[in-house]
Length: 135
Ligand code: ZN
Image (cartoon, rainbow, N blue to C red; front, top):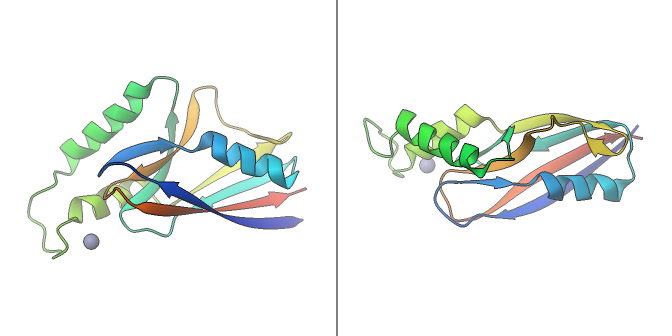
C-alpha cells in the first residue's frame, strides 16, 4: 500500500468563503496513478475547515455561509482577544478533515457532491494536506 502526502495551497479571497477544490483534488489523485484506495484531507488551521456538499447550485454554498453567520454572529459574548471567535466556532462546526473513497481513479462522490475548503477568517494563503493511499 502506497501513501502519498501532498500539500495543496488554497488562496482565499474574502473573510468567509466556500471554495470548491474538488477538481484540484481529482487532478492530484490522477497524478499519483492510484486507482483504488482512500483520499484523506486535512487542514491545519483553526479558522478554516473542510466540508462536502452540493456544488451544482452555487446558491447552496452561499446559503451555508449565511446560515452559519446566523448561527454564529461575528460579535457576541466572546472572550478571545483576537476578535475572530466566530471563525473558530464555524471552523469547528465544519471540521478539519474528510475521507473520500477513490474508486477506479475517481473520487467516489455523489452526483451533487463537491469538496469545499471553508474560509472563515480570510483572505489568507491556506493549506490542505492531501493523503492518498491505495494502489
Ligand atoms: Zn483567533
